[in-house]
Image (tube, rainbow, N blue to C red; front, top):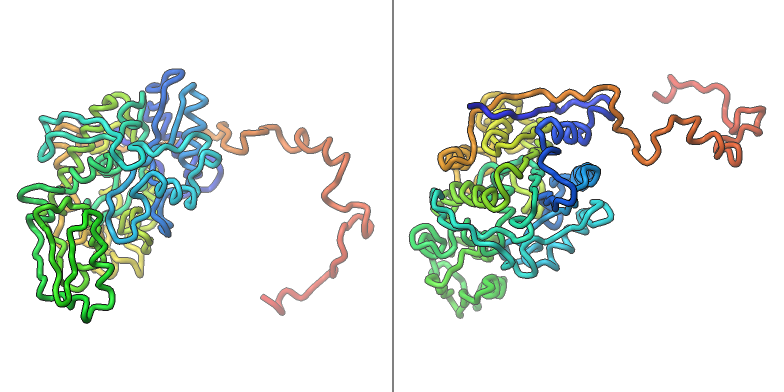
Length: 446
C-alpha cells in the first residue's frame, strides 16, 4: 500500500505560504497532532550544523514546531547527539562541543522556545541498547537515551546529500543522528572483522616522509584519540588491529596517500543507517514518530561538514509523513526531476538535466555508490514503503500565520500609542514630515 506524503512546493507568495507555515500545515495534515497527549515529552530531532557550516536548517523551524507542540499540551525539547571524533579538529564530539557549536549556529533555549538537549550525554555513552533481529547488518543499535525515552519523536530533517550515505534524509537523521557515539561506531562499521577500517584500509607506511621531512607529521601523530598512529623518523606505524573506525585521520594522512579511505565500510554504512533508523523507531514506537523533510538548500554534502557548497538543485519544498522510506523516496524523486543549479557539483558532474541521478554522482566519497541503498534496505527490513502518494498541502486563506503575540489589526494595536508619540513628524513642513526635494530626475540615475 502506498504511504501518504504531504507536500508543499518551493514557491511562496504570502505569510500563509511561507516555509514555516507549510511545515506547520504539514504537521497537522500528516496527523502528528493526534500523536501528542498533554504532558507528553516530545523530542524534535534536529541537526545543529557543524562549525562554519551554513546549510543547516534555521532554528525558526524547530521553534515553530516547539510552539505548536506546546499549544497541544506537549513538552518539547530539541535533541542532538555527539559525533565520532572524525577529523583532527572535530567540533561536536562532546556535549560541551555540541552546545558551543549549536549556540554559535543559533540553537539555544531562547531561540528554540524549549530546552536543547544533547541526547547521548557528555561523551556519547548515555544510550539504550535495542535488539534488532530483523536488521540487515546490525543486530543491535545504541540509541541516544533522551530520544529513546521520549513519548513522541518529530524528525525535522534538512534533506541533502551525504558523503557516506549519499542521501541525507529522514533515515539518516535517525540512523546516524539518533545514535549515541557508541551507536555511530556501530553504524560506521567500527571494529567489524570484514568491513571495518582496520580490516579494509590499504596502508602505505613507505609513503610517509616521517619526522625528518614532513612539516605536518605532528598532526598525523596526534590524529587518533586512541593513540594508534606513531610517526617515526622516516615512516609511520599504525596499530590497525585496534582501530575503532573513529575516522579521526580524515584530512590528515589520507591526502598524502599513506592511508586510503576504503569503499567497504562506506558502502556498508548505508544499510546500517536503515537498520539503526528502525531501531530508533522501535525504541519510541512506530505510531509515535513523525517525519518532516525540509528539502531546501539541497547541498551535496551533509551539515556535519565544516562548509556548505552550492546546492545541487533549487529549493524543492516541504514534505511530511509517517513513513520515512516514502518521504525520503519522494524527496529523492523530486531532486532527480529538478534542473541542477549552474555552477554546482551537479553541473560539474554532468547530471544537471532533469531525470538524472544527482546525489549519486555529486555527493558520495566514492564514485558509483548508490543513492537508493538506504531506502531499499529500509523497505526490505519493514521500516516503510517506497510507494507513496503525494498529497498537496493547502493553507486556508483565513488561517493566521502572522505575528502571534498581538493578532489585532493595526488601528486597534497602535492608535492609543500614536496618541502619545507619533513616529511620523506630522507637525513639520506643513504635514510633509521631512525636508526633501520635491521633484528629481530619476532617468538621470536609473
